[in-house]
Image 1 (cartoon, helix red, strand yellow):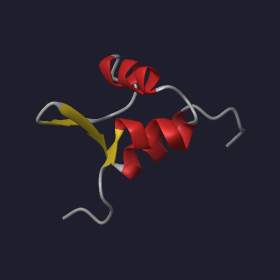
Image 2: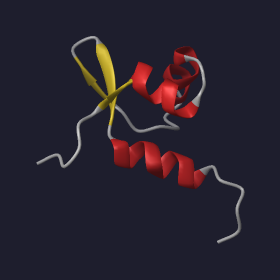
Image 3: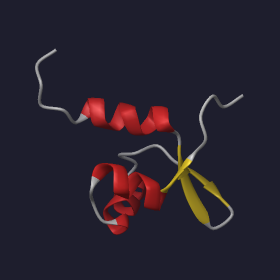
Length: 60
């Protein structure tokens, strides 16, 4: 079903070069789509790519 594994909040924070708390805040504010598995949030690579595309300042 999944073509790529889900990323942890830690992984996403490293990719974006921000604090884990920032990623959690974006998840809480529903800016980044995520799924909660147990006590931890996971982010699909596609959803992280969509977040980046939605927040780019480059012209279409």
